[in-house]
Image (cartoon, rainbow, N blue to C red):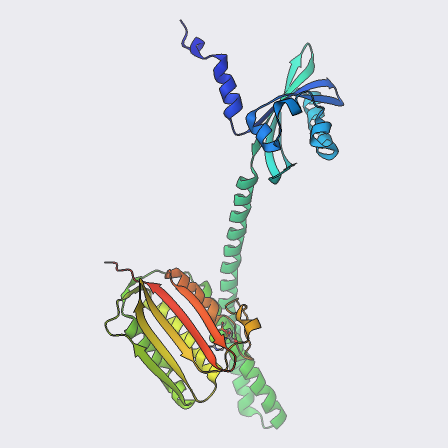
Length: 357
Ligand code: ADP
Ligand code: MG
């Protein structure tokens, strides 16, 4: 006995009904008249209908005029060609809305003409969305790389412009021109700052994660900025808990975060004020807070904070917090801002306690 004979028709029936693709059989009455003859479970459940409600219905009666005509055009194409056709087409469903299908239509030739059509429709909505997502993120990363290249290239002409500006400044005796030169100088400075911060953002990050002592990192940053703080009569106050666990981190990146936060705090204070830098253990986290008694942030601006290029400063870049957020996220930490306009701001960072060896 042949092995194949064990395959029974009933198995085909099971396949037909359990497959997730929508399968349908259409009877061709004439080129304008098509009736639904059979469909599988997936078809019924997608259209939320029953066998009884669908069998024998004209296609445009069941799908509605617009989608019916769309389907009939495809049926006619398969009939004229007398060949299997494949195409992508969208259809709307009562609950799930619009879906995109990859549809195969097979004409069954009976006595020289097409008497029936078999259709298989595979839902590719999600697949297509994922593909588009991927294409979009690739595009973004290419744009990012290009922009980083451009930012880098801008440095050279900028250096020479600054050089010539110095020359003009040096030779000039006219007071008006002196003022213009000063404005130009500060604008150049701003361009430079934007380029620098942008490059930090775009730089491919080499990862060199280690267990770092957070108190030492904070100390270094405070040391770095203490001169500036002194000049503006701003007190930098440390409040570290004793024996803090290390943070598994990239020390340079964490320094970058705290430099940005302390700079912002100092800029919010202007002159005379206090910044408290707290570090402590809190449950499964190490919490660091930067608390300033500066001007604070208005409620309506609070939500825009950290969006790239959002700044309220004349010479700001609006990239500082974007960089902070990105670095904190890379360290699996969280970043929150609380602010009281006129009173000050609290930035809270939580880093997970993870020991790695
Ligand atoms: P920039 O400092 O170049 O403006 P940032 O991304 O560092 O860019 O900050 C964005 C904006 O957030 C600032 O312009 C400021 O309005 C607000 N901001 C950030 N930190 C503070 C703070 N400590 N106090 C008040 N406002 C702040
Ligand atoms: Mg800043």
